[in-house]
Amino acid sequence: MALKLGGKWVQLNSFQIATFGFAGVILLGALLLMLPISSASGVVTPFIDALFTSTTAVCVTGLVVQDTGTYWSVFGQAVILLLIQIGGLGVVTIAASIAMLSGRKLGLMQRSTMQDAVAAPKISGIARLTVFIVITTLCIELLGAAVMAPVFCRDFGLGQGLWMAVFHSISAFCNAGIDLMGIRQPYSSLTSYVGNPVINIAVMTLIVVGGIGFLTWDDVRTNGLRLDRYRMQSKVILLTTALLIVVPAVGFFFLEFSDLPLGQRILSSLFQSVTPRTAGFNTVDLTAMTQAGQMTLIILMLIGGSPGSTAGGMKTTTFAVLIACAVSVFRRREAPQFFRRRVGQDVVATALTLSFMYVGLCVGSAMIISLVEGLPVLTCMYETASAVATVGLTLGITPQLGALSKVILIVLMYLGRVGGLTLIYAALSGQRTVGRLPLDKITVG
Image (cartoon, rainbow, N blue to C red; front, side, top):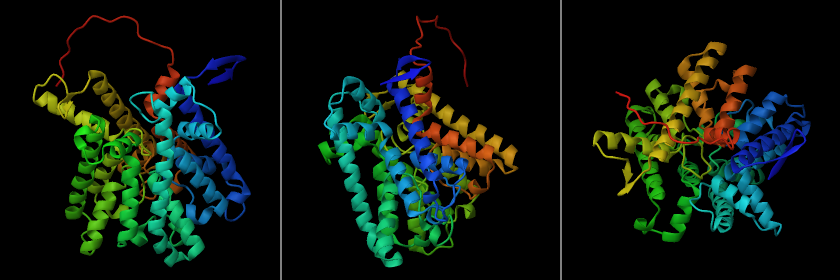
């Protein structure tokens, strides 16, 4: 793909295509959301609010400055849902799917771009994988909507109930966390369903399935229960995901939600353990949690989902590599390892860089917003972690933030969805380090 800049055609690499693609969809979505037909009251939405909403939808984050269920019309909600679907699958995946449906064959450049978009290990079979991703996504979202439809139709009537089932199924699978429950109470998310096992289990399942990654799906489809045949990455993802659900859930059960009945307490503990990575729904009042509980959610938000998935964050594999790296140092191993396989030093360096970037962006942005808005740093860090990890959980301060703070969150959401390293690779395209410098030692620790 080429772009005309300053009268010259510039060939874009896959990182630049993803960067400009997401930006273009966000801008188009903002323009559509500004139209009077998009708001329930028929007014023109201010550009900053429309841009924020479009960004949070495309970047599948979930932070909102206007309640989705009451401020936006059905047309506006449909635009948001379409943006969520595009953001969840990825702009490149959607574009490739449209090209194949129109009968065009993917060239080498398009296949390479798709490989980077879904984090595939090789370029061969990428067209088949793309078709599998799209078809499986639609089937899972329809199944999720079918499971939740009886509950929503009972509560809101047939037409609105079906719309809410479809909307929340896509939002959950794409790890967006945007909801329509404001018609009951503004910004209430799924708190009215805290004890409903159908909605809780359906939403949690959609979040987890959407967040484990397309390649893990491919392993499950190909190898079934024969785990020994899975890619090492899939094994790491499944194990890490299970631990990141169970361990925090046990902690929440014993330390939080003590005022709830046993059944609701179990569901709430599991739900609040699943949703920070990186969906953004909540079934309890998050402001009532202890600061330790809120800090746990911040950590889970920054970890996020898995590579090549609908989720954001620095990814479960990054977290797993950091843990394995620490274990290798403690045990004086030459390199981190998983399942009797060694991890390369380039992977370790990337994991360290990603974690530094996410923590730095989260803390630095929180300090700026704290100074500008006069709010506690921990409260601001909750919002910035939610933005950069594309989660959408909030302590309720987002709608009241000023223009500068909103712009900061918009930038964080964009960085979190496109990926910090993707932007760096896009900006530094063509620059390479030549030669190797002399090796020397430095003492750490």
